Image (cartoon, rainbow, N blue to C red; front, side, top):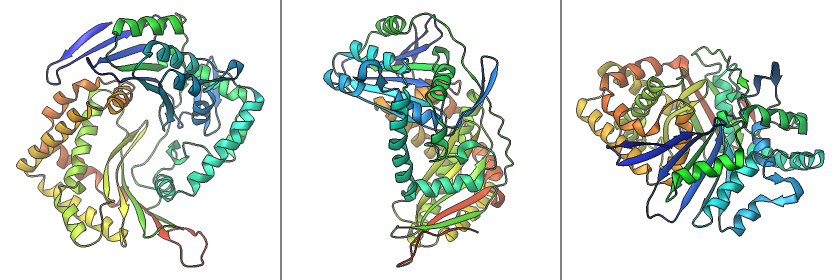
Length: 434
């Protein structure tokens, strides 16, 4: 393991790559009793089309999430969650659009917990009976998601914005697509993407970095397997497909998501710089400290539910805000108008410097959170960026970069509004597009 010291953060990070190709990152936290480990694969719900071992595959939507569920099954009927609990640890997992993570936290028995994490994630065990049983569980989860207004308003938004990117498809898949998932499909996708070189082990706590590396090598072995080659051919025009969509559900007042379509960032330092510029642009435009936020709040167009930021997913990005409002269209028009003003005038230097200091301070404070730190280290690793270099990126960002970003992005043709309206008394759910 090699160490790197980051003086601006007073952090020393240990990194190494096992013989099998697995990158390992250890973030020491001397004196802390809590220990946290993330074992993550660069594989999410959008990665359904890929080449592997000389063949092309198209997997049903929802496979990544299905795998997340099924990997907790082990041969012999072992109860992985129960084994973690017996060690005094908690474990969980999540699937996003572009990665899947498995993790545990503990205060003791760290080595045993780490071995168990590495073992169950790398041991595919799928029987026809268990896969069929899980189908019913996931189908119920899909139904619950369809009844959740906050999920539906976002899913309607991205379906309105994108023509080909698989963000259009829910992470869970659909009731129809999960019926195409078989043990063979799960094995294929596990073999293609749960390979050491396509994964990352990140550990934070008072642990021995060399010991972490040794344990991972002992459990996972030395065999090197190539990962599947993801098909990322998702051409998109920057103009949205549909400017406004609406449906009605059981909500107390209209709920909205509003977004501007942005170019895919790619990877590396330049991409992360653009992401941080976009974060600052979002703060300047409609953040809690912005003039627009105060105006909208005083006018009664938004309440404390309003918020937003910049979201990036493999192959796409969007500047997004959301909340409750009796007049979402007025919120949209106010954001467009204020965006034009900032694009023309720029952000005042004093305001810009204050925003930049505040944003940098929030990032530094977030390092106190084990979960936030592990998540970001993993996400940025797959974007080919060392997360602990973020202070130097912030330091060089200029107010002019923010103005140029807003000038390019805050355009009517890039904007889409998704609204969930309250049901009319005695009415049914209504689906409509404008």
